[in-house]
Length: 330
Image: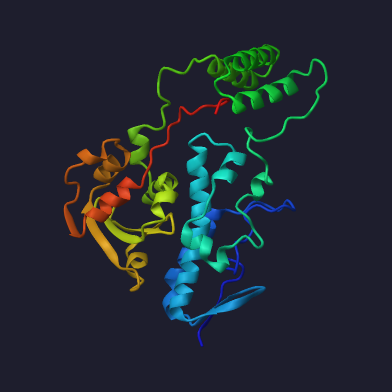
């Protein structure tokens, strides 16, 4: 038999990304990337895969499914956490919102027997649910802010509580000699009083985007993938970016976007059936991926093969974050 030792990269449960004992937080994106590399290098020539402390997995088809689900598990946790951060959610709120795709929830080897998606918040309750302490010391502005923050989250329409909280933030801000602290307090007060910035936040110049490598481009797209909708899809796209001379493979699997760069990596696995392939320029690729009006893209491909609806399906799964999210109100 051809046996592969996966060390502790692919185990029979969700491993620790963040630990209760205080070990260094693991890089879930790198974890997923190395598992994809394992699939490329070994999936089609392995009969048994095993890991430290855990029982083996037998049979090539089962091994491929096992490694894919392990890969997608860590990619999903990383990318969806960042997507929700970009929507303005806090760590506690992300922990409550995070739900694995159905196939990952039902697989035995992706359960939280050891690691957990919510370790980072230690099961902290969201602000709207957390019980406030029953007393505070007279004149403790910081704790008064804590209580009022709960009141605002419990009833966002309570303008009296919002005005009082804004006054507290202003008082704390005026007492700060630290510039950034003062700015944060006063920004919170401004939002509570109903004032919002007039202009959109500038998130990147065209020249900066054009300088991106394809690796970082697709890594940033993975953070924009709506995992809850993407879990219903499973397909592979191949792109050739002619002016960069690079082949790219995009894999939608278990609510995650996996990307590979390089012809060898893209052509490696016979088990991956490509639904659509296209040739285009980097400029056209950036244009369609960064413009809001995706429906007006026109024909961006110089050459294409397969069912183009899968490309449209891929674009429909991407969401554009709104950087002007609320800071101190729900």
